[in-house]
Length: 188
View 1: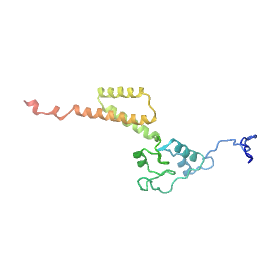
View 2: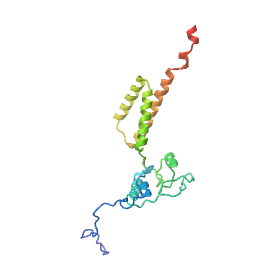
View 3: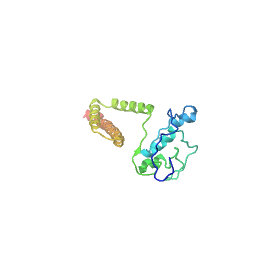
């Protein structure tokens, strides 16, 4: 482009064109590169997530060697690069841990192993319920799934489902109280 005043449109195409997409692990297969590529960016706003993902994609991300000091609690508990606040402070205050602004925070999706573990725990809890309570729980799940919700509401939905499951389990324990098995009443 010319430095001429008012000349903002280019007449020729770009001189150097990339023929292939940049791959950050093409020539570097070290442990550090594998570690950086496996990072899941979470507890930050959408814009900050895009920034950090860009750094990872184009090999500009530099991981921390030592924990940084959190700007809210003052502890050396920030373990992610480019973050200025620890995850605990970010959760309690509902802020992005990179820019410290009150925006919609993106939460990390559980890994496959964690998801399988959670599913197995849920199945075990459901199997422990009596049939009547189990059907009640399934009806409650169907009712919640029919209601269309966004991502932030899905996290609350999971908490609600676990709360409902625990309440059903507690009610199950209340059905069999100690008074049902007293021998003193039978002798009279």
